[in-house]
Image (cartoon, rainbow, N blue to C red; front, side):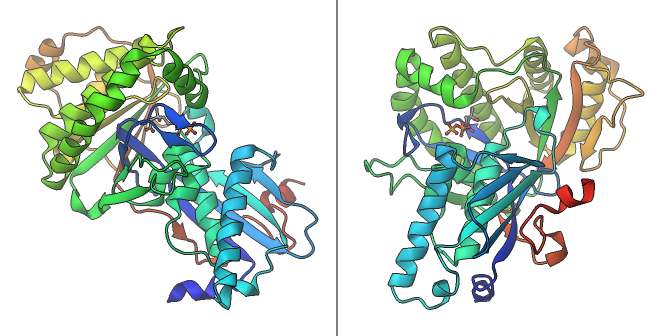
Length: 405
Ligand code: DP6
């Protein structure tokens, strides 16, 4: 196995992807272990557009564990970070006591330095904790030579992070054991299964930072009867239908379930007391646009989903991307002299018929959307082989700090 060469090194760099749920995780039954009240399902996005890169170094010269996130030193004592570090070290210890010689080569008492960056702006409000914790756990596991089921460890960093441990279409099975050993992620289909599927992220210009998901879902669990109903009586059946729709690449069913699940999640937010609002006026306009478009064609061609913020993620087939982008430009005209409006996979300009425009019949909302990222499903975490891409230098300090000093 090529894996063996990594656990003798004391410097490892890996990348991990973002994932966007089409059946949402919202609510924990155990806060400490991060065990959910329902299973969930997501699409892993391609790392060409969105990824976290993490370097971990270990040395007997390091006095303490340290972490740098997006250029700044951060608090290593964060409980979730500590859970991940502790779990990986425990697995590494277990491995060496089980008689695996390779893992003995890295001294477990040595401290680590961790450096992590995202290739997308944190300010865009795109969930970065999933890619971040997935990358941390994957990189630490490589450093210590730990193999096997790692989604259970990533889950303890951030619930949604367990789904970023795999590429393609991934479910997080809620499990029922009190210790969480069966609350793990599992790939349903690889990213190659549905090559025509596209994912467009519409970054909405937001004024305020919304309530974070950890705090939000805690209040929902305590106060929303709708959330309890959803978890017990809606999601189990919906998971089965969604998995079947993905298996047969049935966009209509996939899209309708995605929309309904996003709407129900936001309904549970409104049912929370006091209520939580993640959708803003632009989000609601995007919802209208999608429904009017689908009605015009008499089919579900577009499917939106929203997480704990106003940004829309719209799933569609490749053949419909050009027209959709043109409509977005029409109804949310961007700043002409500003930043590039369209990022990611290429889009060709097309004209939209007057008939479609009048069927949509919406007023335009200038600058409501800051930019669009056009991407698709992609693979899970990867080791970066090129050693020049390590984020930490041979002295164990971030390279960018030295450049700017
Ligand atoms: C709305 O995974 O960020 O994006 O487990 O507390 O870290 P913690 O929460 P987090 O919640 C994600 C919520 C969501 C839905 C989803 O991704 O399934």
